Length: 265
Image (cartoon, rainbow, N blue to C red; front, side, top):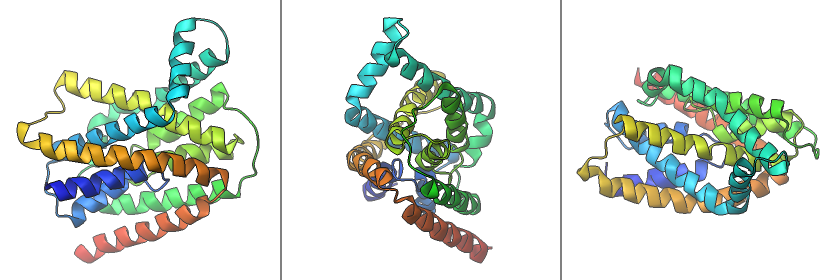
């Protein structure tokens, strides 16, 4: 992978992690279009590094909220901070379960499965369309809501299912305030990404070869900067109920992905 390709993929990850169009799906599409021949393990390593960059950009944007989460965990008082922290923890359960018991199966999806990406993008478009039609409310995230949203996050491990799209759509369809839904969606993934990276590094699943450091660093920086802009942009978009535009985009890209696969057979 060249530095130029790393920059392109980094920017795509940074933008699409927060915009509801599936970052993993777009990364797999671009890898195919750029002729990336990485092994599934190497491809997944690059994807994880880019997700780490967007996790850091989330922390920068929501630094006050992150501080409140940490404060709530260590205060040991039944207050709003602790409740919010526990909701974040509950939302992680489905994804942790899926990662522990189905990791090998999910890794196989990160190897140019463009037909799957196409169909999953269409599913994402339908979720966004339904959410866009939902009424605005002022409801907070409940403990039950947190678990349901967590299931959406677990399913979004599949490339083509937008994580932010699935979690925000689920939240809005559950009647949660749109701004609160976006905030919860972005914050709930941060501990998962750090946990995933720590686990893979400790177990040796991710190997950073010296020849890859430059490419990974460039991709990381591009993803981090793009993520800072996209995070703020997405919050404004959700407030204005503009998800239908992304629904149309996902549908079109999904059809293109399916068509590319069928024409190559």
